[in-house]
Length: 417
Image (cartoon, rainbow, N blue to C red; front, side, top):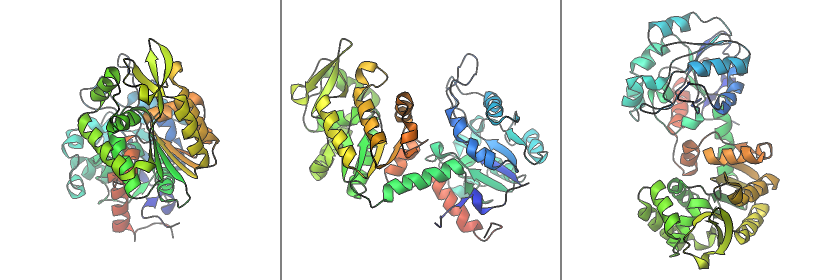
């Protein structure tokens, strides 16, 4: 299949100096600086190992200014070294003379990790600027002077436009790393597959982004039905005129800016696609720590809605079993609490058991998949949260734009036939 972007297979990178942009932003203990989870580092191992004969300088970020976990990349280098079984040297600089000398001094097979890209003002000051302007930044000009190729593997940040992510597209061949390539191929397959029925199951408390996803998927006939759970379902219930109850509404208003506007959008979607949007017929509320199943006709409740109900679980499981393609973003309830994990567990297991091509993504979704131990039975577990939602909403990702742009510019370059 011909791709409209370069991959690692298009170039002979042996002995070449390569800049590799990853997303290894990880939970950090603010007191010690130690990484609390290395999942994102492990995801990039396949790309790093495929560059074993190159001279590799890694670019990455950790958190953002003002946050407790905004720190250097030193601990990341230590953990990468442990995962690879070879030294990944941390460099206290990004494009200063120390960093440039370290890159020039790389031997074949050596790897260094440069300093947190967000320590440098250009990364934020030029965010969302045109690529032509980013290409003239000090970061891009200095780093591109000591390297031949740029590998873009940061899918989790693919919805961001910053110099270290997209600024190199005009100055050197930029190619997708293995994580990026797999994401674009697998999510692309889920979106474009003609096999029907195709359903999207949208949940979680960050419901605002899911409204745009639902709208795009229904308007473009990307999916036949949208199954709503979690906070997304609660917003659609509110849009149907059902009073949820004070605790549930307060939680939604806390999490979603312009809550009332989004409820209005849900009303419009229900008018346009009533038969294609499924909302729960029953829910489980947290009655002083105990699970209590109630019909939506019994709402409002003085207790927090914490899961979907049993009848809804059965109905949604049937939809999943009949589907040929399933896209999932967001849990069905507060799955971290055992009393309210039932909906998420049952529906996610149904996805794992089905013969449908399945793509799931989002931070809480991945956490639930890990908790239930079903990752190996899902066709694709996406590393992206915001990036995946942006893609599902039908919007172009800045990193994909950069990849396509670079192939157009350097398509006649020294790549394999």
